[in-house]
Length: 81
Image 1 (tube, rainbow, N blue to C red):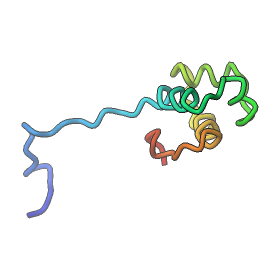
Image 2 (image 1 turned 90 degrees about the vertical axis):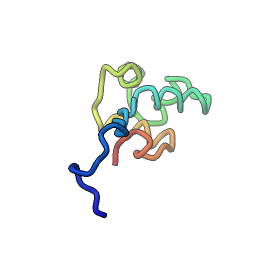
Image 3 (image 1 turned 90 degrees about the horizontal axis):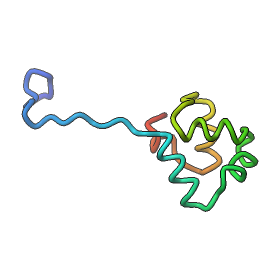
């Protein structure tokens, strides 16, 4: 049997919720004990830029990738590749 949209049981289909990258980054930072200032020094962004990313106001993938690298998070944990 092949998988196709025509044989997908729609009654059991559940959408996959999008990853909230901002929340993942903030939680990771707090878990390892970094302050926003510490993270700014580590990744080379301004404190205000990190705060905007963590609040979800800024979704610039380049900034998200820099923060993820500084926190040693795989991009897949943020829904990125």
